[in-house]
Amino acid sequence: MGSTRFDPSGPLGGRLQTAADKSISHRSALFAAMADGTSTIDGYLRAADTDSTLAAVRALGCGVEVDGTNVRIEGVGLRGAGLVDGVIDVGNSGTLMRLLTGWLSGQPQGEWRLDGDESIRRRPIDRVAAPLELMGARIDTTAGLPPFSVHGSSLVGANHRMAVASAQVKSAILMAGLLADSTTSVSESPASRDHTERMLAEQGAAISVSEVGSERTVTVEPCDRLEPTDRTVPGDPSSAAFLVAAALLVPGSDITVDDVDLNPGRIGLFRILERMGASIEGLPHGDPDPLGPEPLGSIRVTHGPLKGVDVGADEVPSSIDELPLLALVACFAKGTTTVTGAEELRVKESDRIEATVSGLSALGARIEAAPDGFSIEGTGELRGGTIESLGDHRLAMLGAVAGLASREGVEVDDFAAASVSYPGFAADLASLA
Image 1 (cartoon, one colour):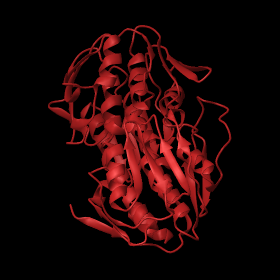
Image 2 (cartoon, one colour):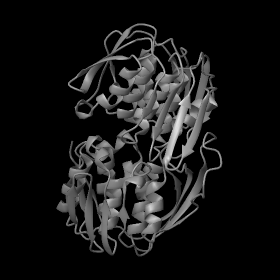
Image 3 (spheres, one colour):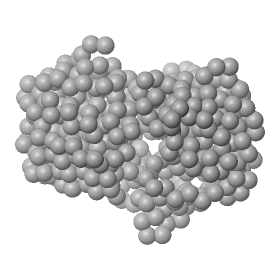
Image 4 (tube, one colour):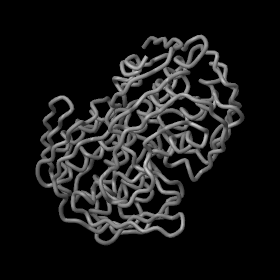
């Protein structure tokens, strides 16, 4: 496993494209598998998680051709998932595990067994299983955890109100809704990321969106077929966030990241950083078409002073994956930063609340955990030391950024975990130094 050292850096500068979007890559492959015909995906993220998705759809009977980051998939249709001799291995991917459950639950017949790595076996499936079972799905779990079996069933439409906003759970329900006998809706407040709605609408699904106050409801009608499509995957804002943080924290830095997905549901961290005083140019204002194409753009980030802020539950869905990184940034801000309403962090690849607090504490941070978040007293610096990634790709990249901005540098145990979502992260950082 080993460790990788990241030493304090001079100013970062230049421009680059970050890794392709992981969420959109997963969905592109799955929705291509569900289509009738051949779809092409340009710029597909080639990483451990998304390669698991390609392997899964191939196992289910799809023709899959891969040429670097260009992928061609011959779909089996909405109701054409093939039986698998053995287990579908989702690897480390919670997105694949949950979305695939939504699709398979509505197949006319058959049984599929899903399992993954040690981390996946700690991640709950009951939050997906429960709403799907209300639609008639049959899912046998191991005390609410993987491994589990999905039995193809006849599904009925249902109206769901989410207790906790989750794009993965919402997506699984909408995918099942395509196969149900009547209308299915999902209501949530605040809204989670909306890639599934946009992409299914592009492929011909009858989807509508309504908003009443802070509550957003997505409705899907039963569907006979999805159209194949040609897609280009944009840059991942969650991956770009680590480059952004590095530029904000290393004095004298000035970088530009091109072709980033600036979907309003994905740039919550950037909005929080703006409130902290960060200079981030290029962020959009509003979104005129919630079912239209993903908004893309370039962002320029420069180093500057930051201040502490309070982050509440309404900001969590659009920044959930980046909140540990926010904790790192807050160490360099003036004043206290608090995050609440983020209990979802406890069921990610690791318990990211405990992992973030223990990891940053080991580097000299003044940080305390809460049941649903953490509090950081900014000191304007970080000593450095050793941080364990715990096999979590985002904690590995957090450690790398911490090393560049620290006084003494940081050793990241198992930095290889970053390959789950951003295999070229270390090289991209080095190109900016």
